[in-house]
Image (cartoon, rainbow, N blue to C red; front, side, top):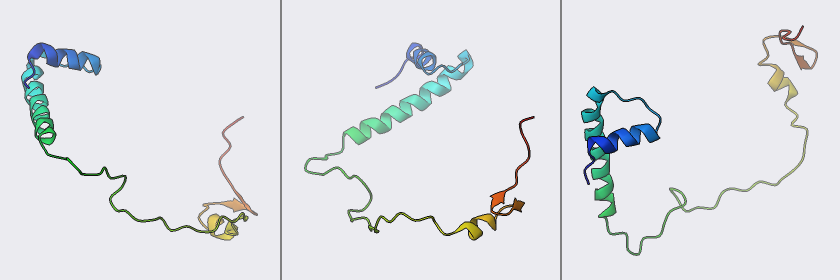
Length: 95
């Protein structure tokens, strides 16, 4: 499949991008190259190949779902540039 300049302009309009007339041949060439790759992918025989949902078929490690308070207040506040007690100090943004 090969795109003509009118189709390239239409694609640019639909994508809401401004393309100068001087850029049309380059864009046409790039889009035709992309369509060529898609045609190659469509030619691959995928009969009997199951679709993958991920790179590996493995069960995720599960942990017990326990509600807690986190218990990491000191670790979190250690990253604060400034703090007062158990709170971060931030600049006032509302007058």
